[in-house]
Image (cartoon, rainbow, N blue to C red):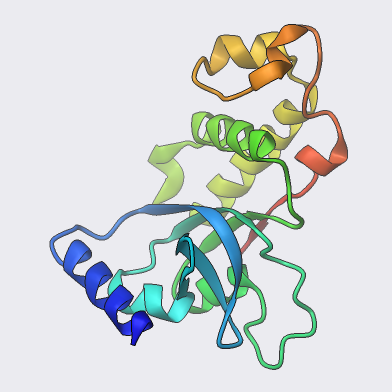
Length: 182
C-alpha cells in the first residue's frame, strides 16, 4: 500500500515534466522485494521498475549511491542498480563500485559535470560520459584542496580546507571506484 502511494505521488509530480537528458540520484541504495532500489526518503524505497513506471529513464544516469555494484548473490538478474537502469532504458550509467565518502562523491559530481561535453552527449552518450569520467578520476586523484576550493567554492570540503596543498581524494578508495556501465 505504501509503495502504491509513493508511486502515485511521483506520477503526479512528473506528469508535466519533459523527459530529462540526465538523471542524478544521490541517496542510499539497497533492495526492495529483491530488486535494486534507492531510498528517496527515510524508509521510502523505490525500485528501478517503479522509477521507470513514473518517468522515462534518460540516456545518462549518474548514481552517487551506495551500494550499487556488489550484489553478486542476488536471486535473479538484474542484480545491480546500474544493470537495472540499463535494462530500463539508460544508455550509460555512472556509479561507484564500492561505498565512498560523501565528500568524495560531491567532489566527483562537481568535477564530472564540469568535464561533461553536453554538445556531444546526444550524439555519443557512452563515449562522452566515459571521457568525462576518465578526466574526472584523474583530476580527483591529483587536485589539491586549494585547487578544488578555487574551482568549486560550494564544494563541502569541511576540515579539508585547512591545508591547501593536501590532495584529499588521492586515496584509491575515493577516486578509483567510479566507472561507466553501458
